[in-house]
Amino acid sequence: MPDDDRTVTAPQPAANRERPDPKAIDRKARLRIPSNLPPKQAPADRAHNWDEVYFLFDPEIAKVEATRCIQCPAAPCTKACPVHNDIPGAFWLLEHDDIAGAADVFRETSALPEMCGRLCPQERLCEGHCVVGKNAPPVAIGKLEVFVTEWQRTHAPPAPRCAERRSGRSVAIVGSGPAGIGAAQRLATAGHHVVMFEAWPLPGGLLRYGIPDFKQNKPAVDRVFAELAALGVEVRTDTRVGDTVPVEQLGAEYDAVFLAFGATEGSRLGIAHEDAPGAYGATEFLVRGNLEPHELPEAMSAPLPAFQSVVVIGGGDTSMDCVRTARRLGAPTVTLVYRRTEAEMQGRVEERRHAVEEGVQFEFLTAPLEVLLDEAGAVRGLRCRRMRLGEPDESGRARPEPIPDSEFDIPADALVVAIGYNVDQEWGEIAPAVHRDRWNRIVVNPETMHTNVRGVFAGGDDVNGADLVVTALADGQKAAAAIDAFLRDGIWSRFELL
Ligand SMILES: Cc1cc2nc3c(=O)[nH]c(=O)nc-3n(C[C@H](O)[C@H](O)[C@H](O)COP(=O)(O)OP(=O)(O)OC[C@H]3O[C@@H](n4cnc5c(N)ncnc54)[C@H](O)[C@@H]3O)c2cc1C
Image (cartoon, rainbow, N blue to C red):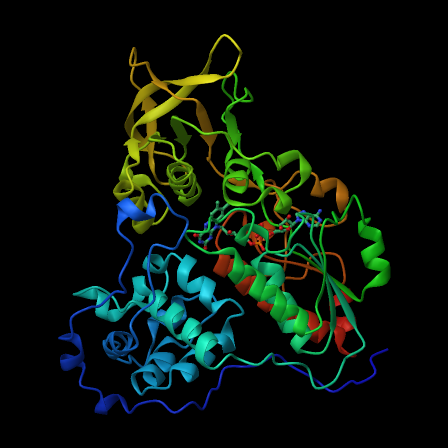
């Protein structure tokens, strides 16, 4: 039983935050302010280091950029944000010199504002809906979010919001990526005992074992877990649920379970010699290229050799991370092979621009046919075929069709397959009672993230398929609110009906 039944809830957005009088905002004057971005590293420099592309905004310039926000009362940017950050509210405080206050606004609705500011595809979320962006560059929402939250960390670090009372309830979280982090932070703040189980040697999910340092550095991931530890969250790494810990044990020992194990099974090409020495899946290439041997499981701890020519196959953000990692590992020639044109690519335009600036070559309308091997059986190149675009397929994108007799070879000593991720098949055996769809994704009530099994919730990539940091975070935070309600007496019976 809980030792205290009072409702202890996670921080909520301040609904009564002082807002400007819309009539007092001179929108025309604001729309005339030129757009600003923070300075960035020159491509020739950054292709040889692992630091982030952008530096932080200068405070005065950040303030000017915040003043470009026309404070629309409808705030379409907030609606388009999966965690519904009060963006105009934050920028109103920033333009009035309250930088820490602006950071707090982001922290009210997001456990990972520094990371979302760096990693979200803002052009299709907040910035894509910014009204200023109709006739000019949108307000630089992501980069301002990074600025205010990092400024706050340096000048007025936020104190952990510990629960006033413990609830006496415990929650097991499987997976320590953004979904697990979002849930853990909210549940611990609400007074529940949280234990995270993580299969890798260190916590963070794809924030650590996927996304390279030049997009999001690892000390920031360590900082998140130091803050969770301060809230009392326990993290058990090197612990694979279904292997080291049977899933039944979680059901017996905890009052609720949140499944946040992601979608980390790399898709395969299905062509000859895909497993030859010198051919890598994207995750293996990225983690061996980005992490120190002691941060990796033994089977992956050998550093990658030096490459002369790397070919990466794929068209999304992961493939951009691979080509840019290959350049930083010193490969003079790096080629991306994609079977459609740039217009059909799904990743961020900015990432592609950065890759081109860093010297990556793109082979569009090109499909892989066969991995070519040398006498020792290792990769020596990729046989490809030229494609042309046909009618749209079920995804709505033009279907690539082969051009007859168009085969050609690209020499390479390394090949990286970055064509997408799926939910791991093994979860069907680890937790057979939990309903899944035909793509193996967990089926949940979208309002509560509750699965068909009472007390078992799920969210992030294991529900959505491979998606985004912010959508996983939003799921984790939403699930935490539902788990908190579930753990309070009187709510249990409602969920038994599921
Ligand atoms: C290379 C790469 C780059 C990306 N770049 C971006 C980007 O720029 N912006 C963006 O928004 N998104 C990006 N994404 C997507 C984003 O990282 C994911 O959508 C997000 O991390 C999903 O969060 P999650 O918590 O659901 O899962 P994950 O981050 O995958 O975390 C799941 C965790 O569960 C653990 N786990 C799995 N099975 C078990 C088990 N049986 N027992 C214990 N633990 C287990 C895993 O080891 C993993 O640590 C990228 C993805 C990749 C692969």
